[in-house]
Length: 60
Image (tube, rainbow, N blue to C red; front, top):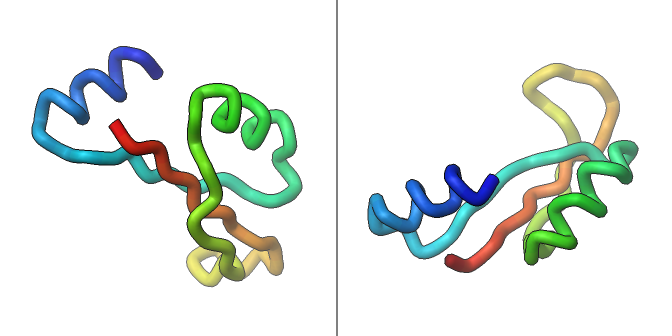
């Protein structure tokens, strides 16, 4: 994650955005510990899973 975030910052982007699912509490804890915050929540329309997707963002 450190390398990915550094490369994104080096490319000039001010933030990193990613998605995870509400059921995936381990990934939510991992990203929260790295400074990501929830900026959106919406149904999974791409895979029609019936699950809810979380949009997480971290300012670089």
